[in-house]
Length: 152
Length: 334
Image 1 (cartoon, each protein chain N blue to C red):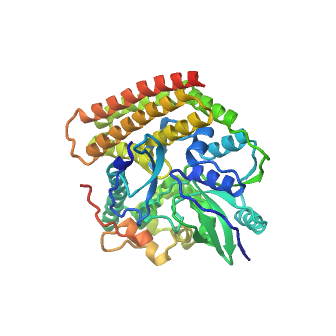
Image 2: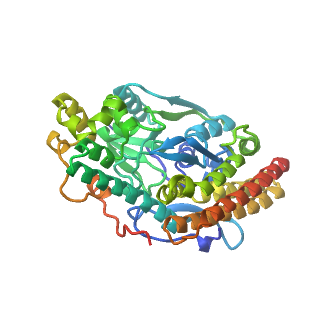
Image 3: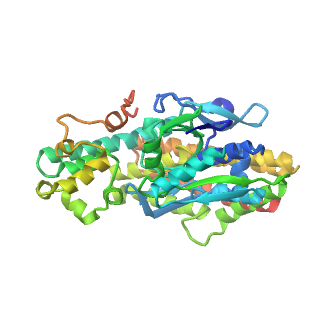
């Protein structure tokens, strides 16, 4: 890659942080160049964020329909899966899966709920509900808004 | 407690190289990032469909985290200490003791809880490297190679990142330099580094590693749309690009970084052939970028053709052929 070909597609995905790339200058010598980003990479990053947000929204709707429990929604919002949640809580995967069903979640005792709430760093009351509106994970978790969510 | 180590922070393309380079610089050994990368045999390829991260097969362009550090220090004769912990407060106390002694200390951390990190990068990815360079009360000073300046993180957040759960758990892993030799002979280290990379890329007898892994990935990519459906196939492909281009990989899956290493080594070893190899590696890096651009078009749905996946697979096959002959030739030049 030539120095002048180092991509500079700034979509402000990284809070203004530039990254180092190695490219060849006019004398054929490798040199460090700061890059604002590359389109395929930006798109892959946005894709990952969007997919996560879609899964979270699906989960939220399933909870509102009474299918899944809020636990399922919070697990996804905190970027966890059954294995990671198991490691954080010490509750086995089979039980977590069951707790993700609305019916069995309702019967849970406070000490178990407390474990989940603590892991997600939310209140017990939050854990028992899902938000009424669509949630964007980066915004909710890290207070960060993507300028342009769409992949263009 | 208040202790701030006088530490020169420099950004790098890849976190592990950067941490090593900055740690060595602290001990008056000045090596560029490409040199660290090459001596530590940082170039690699593996596609492991049987290991999944958040449900997607792992593709990686580097050896397991920590290996570059081990190799570089060993090849340069630098003595190091690496520790892992079960107990969180022991891990933090040990860190404090080192900081108090004025020893900058490397740590492996998960990026999800890294509060100063760009939010869009905060996934549950656990193989990031940072250096603790000081502490004021309950705030740690951190040299992170992807950040422009020294950052800070709170005690409780640092505990979380050091004990993040999921794939590649860091278990509080930390490391530091104990002793550096008075004079360093870099030439044999370069040669060892190159030989090891050739071996890794050509001779591991498992199909998922080295150049063979690139072919396996090509074969799988071709089948993804049929086997997984359009949606999931795109997701899988997106993940390959993220691994190829995201933090740490420095673009084109490290190929340019390696080309820079070969160029620098050509001067040090006074070996012109290495410079020619560097030019070849640049061409290979450009091919990886072609693969990235096409894949980007596919998962953006701009490329609707059924043959697009096949085309992407064919670029990978071309890369495999090129890399195979590249490493065979490289082996002969040193």
